[in-house]
Amino acid sequence: MKIENLRPFDGQHCETTATGTLLLQIGVELSEPMLFGLGEGLGFIYWNMKTMEFPFIGGRVKPDVLTRNLTRNLNLELTVKETSSQVKAWNHVKELLDKGQIVGLKLDCYHLEYFSNPFHFAGHYAAIYGYDTENAFLVDTRQQGGKVQTSLKSLAMARAEKGAMASKNLYYTIKKTDQKFDLKKIISAAIKNNAADYLNPPITNAGYKGILKTSTEIIKWFHTSKNIENEFSQAAILMEKAGTGGALFRNLYRDFLKESYELLQLDQLKTGYKEFSEIAALWTTLSRLFEKVSQTKEMESIHQASAILKIIAHKEKKTMEILGTL
Image 1 (cartoon, rainbow, N blue to C red):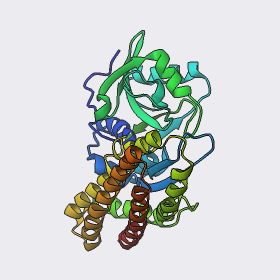
Image 2: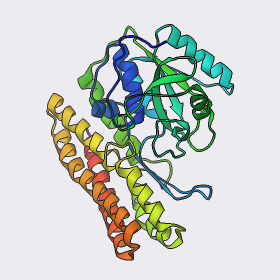
Image 3: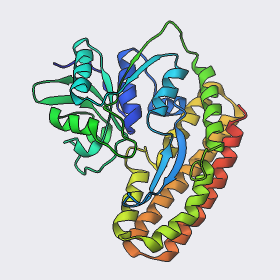
Image 4: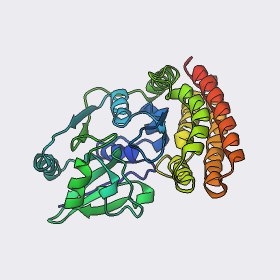
């Protein structure tokens, strides 16, 4: 069966695409930058563990948090459930689909058969809108094909995978409530909340402090890397192409600030948009330097990348302080 009259969300980022598809079903239609911004999605993390092949550079809030923030700001009812039983996990989702409810899923994209270059990442999201005896029908990002399918077996494996960012067969639904939302009011609140979280990270490898730390950590990474060619190339791809919308999510936040300024006409938003336009360009330059490092293995490019990260840290801190005064 497939849910009829499906409106798939056409997005670049997996969580906003999955959640956006659920929102379209209940008549909430917003742009992807607006979903990202209202989800208070901007962040930064530099994560390096011995079990990881190479350090992870992330540019958004933790998985699950974006949808939670977004539905709270939009006065919608979010229901999130987990179970360690793969049988129960599928039966619960199947029951919802049979009732005409599109469901959001959290997955490890390594097992999804439509990924042309599979890699382990357990913080991936897709919306499921149907199934048959062998396959599940999903909505994923534009670059993954939009409306796609994967076998029920592969879906079960993707939902149950363990590791960093994994959940126990997590699925979620969104419903309307009696409360409406005032877009102009919630934009300001979401930006202030995001700024406060970004400027006060709980650990030193997050927020602008994390970017500063990364400026020195990448030099250590270069000297200890077992495979410079692959590691820095993969990091560049993850920053620029792996569902971030480009520039480690800064393009999405820049466009959110532009859309917000057009609605509210506030000076802080105009300044924020201008600054994030420059910041996004710096992140893209950084990813190109990482790619260059992978090709040339030259220390000079690492030092250039380190210098850019220090500039970015300063500019993001300053800009988020301005946005925090809304």
